[in-house]
Structures are given as structure tokens and as C-alpha cells.
Length: 142
Image (tube, rainbow, N blue to C red; front, side):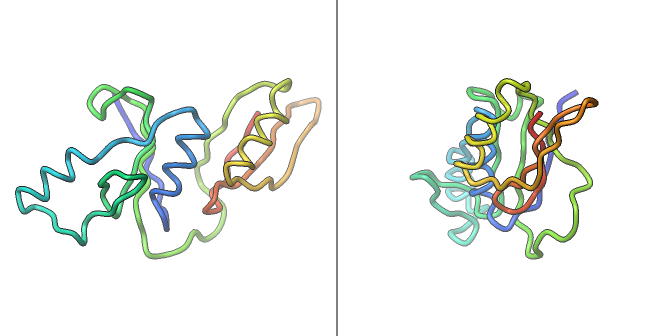
């Protein structure tokens, strides 16, 4: 079974860029589908943007495993534009498992990409750093 996780976003392209870099994935290339929809008259200029030199849907972007397509990957983060801002704590979040020895370096790398550290936990029962992505969505590095 394939699945994707959909995330509401104010700027789906910014979040796709962040999460692709955070996970070592790629931003999914929508340009062929965008061009086909434009040529067939199923989309117009209001439906598209140019992002990183490529045509993209204005209201959605995705991060995927490098070299994968939507049809062959069960791992995809879809970021979809919504008009309202994030409110409250996430009901679902990602945990990035890197190990205690890489925790600080990975936290530094993610903050350089635009994440913000919220707090650190280092207890006998476990350790992790809770961060926010550029739009305030919480995630953990452990």
C-alpha cells in the first residue's frame, strides 16, 4: 500500500524545499504535468508558478525519494496551500531518527535550513530535540 502525508501550508514550495533538504529527498518535478495541463487548456497562468526555474502548481508541492515517481514511491510529503495559518499543536508529527551521536550536528543542520529549536529532552528513558519547520510544524530529531 502506498501513502502520502499531506501537510497544509501557507507556502507549499518553501516547505517542500525545506523537507526535501531535511530528509535528503528531492522536490517532485511537476513541470511535465503542468505543461500538459496548460497545453490542453485544463490549467491557466493563475494555476502555476515558476519555482527554482521550473513550472510548478501554485497550490501544491511535494518532497519525494530521489529518482522516484508518484507511481512507484510509497513515501511522499505533499504540501498544499491553505488560506488559514497553523493554529495549535500538531496532531501528527515526524520523528527523524539519527542517533544520540549525530543529534547535535543534525539539529544544527536543520536550523541552518530554517528550523527552530523548541526544546531538548535528555533523560534515562529517551532523548530528542523538538523543532519547528519554517511554518511552525513540530517535528523531533532523536
